[in-house]
Structures are given as C-alpha cells and as structure tokens.
Length: 302
Image 1 (cartoon, rainbow, N blue to C red):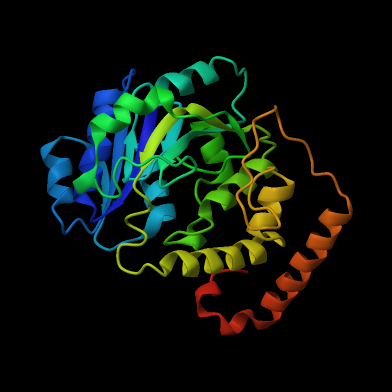
Image 2 (spheres, rainbow, N blue to C red; image 1 turned 45 degrees about the vertical axis):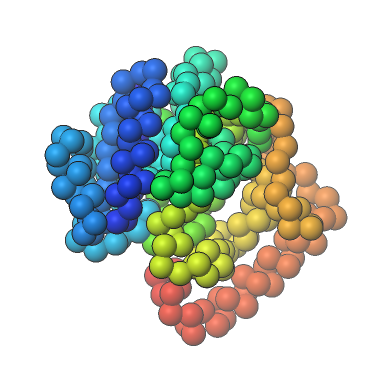
C-alpha cells in the first residue's frame, strides 16, 4: 500500500518500537524502508537480521538526504514520511486509505496527528523505557482530535509522482529544520491545495529524540537556521507561508494555529496584516541577502 520512509540516527530502541507498531497495528501490507545513519548502536545489524529494506550512510547525512536516498527504493504509489520515534496507533492506515478513496487526483498532502509530544497532548511516557503501550491503546478512542487545516507534519502521505515532480526533500536544509515546510511550499507551487491532517490517524511521538539527543538547544538553532534558509530561498519566512497560505503556523501570540479542516486552500487574502508582515519579511530577506556571506551555514543558498 505505502512505501514508508524512516530515517534513523543511532536510535535503535525507538526504531524497534516504531517498526513493531507498524507490523502490529497496520491493516494493510506496507513497504518499510529505513535509512540508517551511522548505525553504530546496532541498528544496522537489527535491520539486516529482520530482513528490512534499507539504505545506509557511514555518517549522519540528515533527514532530507536520508529521505531522498531511501525513496529510490519505493515500490508503491504512495510515500509515507515517518520519524523513527513514532508509535503508530491501531487503525492509522485505515484513515489514510479512507481519505484516498475520496480523492480523484494526486495533488494532496495528508498527515496523521501526533499525540504525546506533538499536536495533541497525551502522556504514555516520555521515553521508550517508560512507554505505557497499554495505556495508549486503551485510550486511543478517547483522545479528542479533529481533521485540521494546513498540515506540514509527519507522518505525511504524498503520491510518488508528486514526490518526484517536486524533487523530493530539499537537501540544503540538512540535517533538519524547516525542511517540512519547504516541502509544503514546493507542493503549493505544484498546485497542491489539500493539506489535511487526519484526526483519527494517530502516531505517538516521543519528541524528536534523534534531533535533541546531543544538544537540547538544537531545536532553537535548527529553527533559526531553517527559517533563514527558507527566507533566502523563497523570499518569505516559514511562519508567513504557514500562516497566510496554509492557515496554520503561529499566531501573533506565538501560539499554534490549529484550525479545523474546511476544504481545499485558496490563495491568501491580501489585507493590511498580510502586507505588513510581507514587508517585514522582505526587510529580513534583504538583510540576509546582504550579510549572508558571514553566515557559514547558508553557503549553499543562492
């Protein structure tokens, strides 16, 4: 049914939990493809012993490159982008399939809903060592969710033809940070207008374990770096695109915009707020353009 891409960086116990949940809680047969970064924790051996399809790099090449590399092995028409610190809840793929039956074209981006350290709070354990699987399973039906607008998140489903048409994940964002919204921007420019999060498709997220494994400040750094790359590439910032185009992102109080899905998106309404924030984005863009030579991590951008 789906070709599931799972980049992993020395995250064996979480990877095991993720793959076991896919095997246990999937209604349909899927192709699981893991990209192993380094694999010095035994994850490479685990993949081989379990006869899973994989790609490999001796060093950590980051999520964008890992996704692009593993996508070359995809055999199914649909690509599902996953993290290795997900636990897929029962019925997750049924929701995707039901949604696909409603569509008569390939131009969409569908996602599940992250529970736990994600969009919907639920405590079944912060780490895999104290993960309470039974508690999660017994409460899946009780978790209050809804279909939401403007998703850029994972687990994310896209048609393989569309993936190829937009060039997959943008590798200038490696190791990660801003790459998911960049993918959404490329989809938007390819006339995709369905960015729908499915409320009943649940994946428990332990919280970007790989990303913050070595440095808890990495999130802030990556967000800042990713936004600079996005701004130089597209002329607007991440939150501007998410807020005005996808109807998501952050509001003026820096709170998550979490709107119920109400159909295909249209071009943004260009009111005073739009133009005010657009001007601010352009000022920041030209500032970065002038001084970007001093930013070593932006060398690959234009």
